[in-house]
Image (cartoon, rainbow, N blue to C red; front, side, top):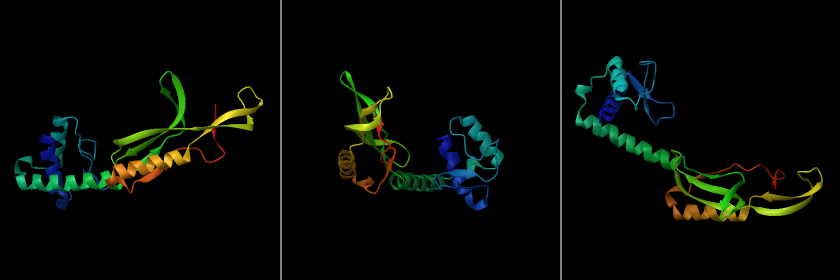
Length: 184
């Protein structure tokens, strides 16, 4: 509750110039360095109180209306970032344990704008033999794996259908470009 009161005071102090919105607009920071920081220490109430005092914020003057205004702004901002900056991340191929064996897979994660995992699913990588690829002992010919593009596409469509609020999430594919497939 103390941190919320301080944040409400910081929100109310924006017109005075003591505080301002952060560059990304998702938090409120001190305009000048306070106790060595521009942001509010949320882990230590005593330090946060010292910051508020040094910045000249009067916490006793914070009204319930100011707290409500701050909370309303925070809820709108939190939800906007959660949706607007969501992404679907496709990992590089890695070995996942399926039963008692390791299987090369890609993981497809739906992450909200705060980086929290909303849902995920793995897609088995496609295996193929390439006669021209140099294998691990220096000879030609190796079994390789590449992402199953169709399977990944189906998972992306499923995530968007299952979570329509994130249907506009951009896709972040962390796989190497075509031709850089991984061999096993």
